[in-house]
Image 1 (tube, helix red, strand yellow):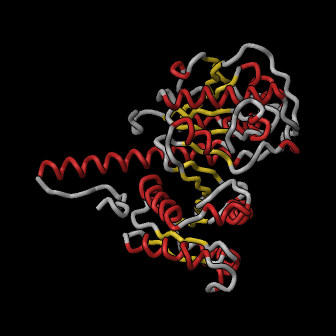
Image 2 (image 1 turned 180 degrees about the horizontal axis):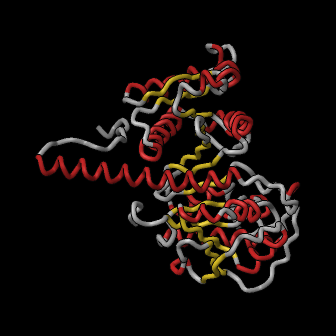
Image 3 (image 1 turned 90 degrees about the vertical axis):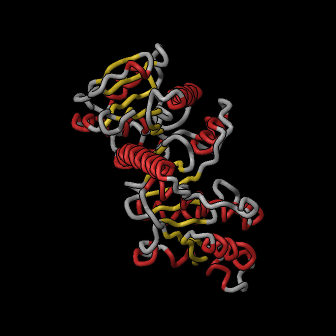
Length: 365
């Protein structure tokens, strides 16, 4: 697709319909002017979308029912009808029916993404525990996409001025030290470096790496992990041309004057990155699955069963997830075009250059 002359097709999976997913989707799309920027394709059913539209009094929304994403009409909200039956919506908790709906929507959206009938995927929240009762044996969308695409990803939490990636994620805290290693940290630093260049157009990204222990180990007084493998991983990455610095103590790092000096941060484990990120940017935060051949984003909140059905859910994070997906898609394609043009010019002129920003690992030289 030419992103200059065509609106991107944004595929949307609805998550658990008993949560706030459909509400924030509809609130995002209720402004007709938003359809000037992209073509939304929701994987659900017109009956379900109409039902929740009426519940929330969003009478200004009109949508087009279709049977496959190829039929999507620009300038319209398109709903791919995946089923014909009425759905019993029970706001506030997952049911077998709502979980099956969430799974069906996600699988259909992923299939469209694989077949290039949508350009990017934006997912509404699912209930991971309930999904596992339906054979969805993943911790979330990131693990699922990795498995289905056979690729390794990098979870990146982002807002306008803060980006946090992870060395480990969704692990019991007791398992984190045994999973960490110098090679893993180097790999994640490199993946983050590549993502920042190709997806965010940051030519020479500066990456801050957090320590594992309080006060980053305090020179071995509070743990040896920093000395054993975190510091060596940072040094070797820096020696190979990546601007990686640290390790920094997480307890004092997240002040604007410090974290804003870097383009991104690598945290060692889930809560080390999630707690400050959600504190600083809950409304506008977005989860981006970097490192994949496709573009996937999701809002930085869950199903929010406690407020589901009340009409008070804030759509800002979901709206931001859509526009981030579009921007990343365009940035990556411009980057690919630039690399291709550079390589073609080098071939024509007989210049032997490398335009790949990826750095070889030991043994590859």
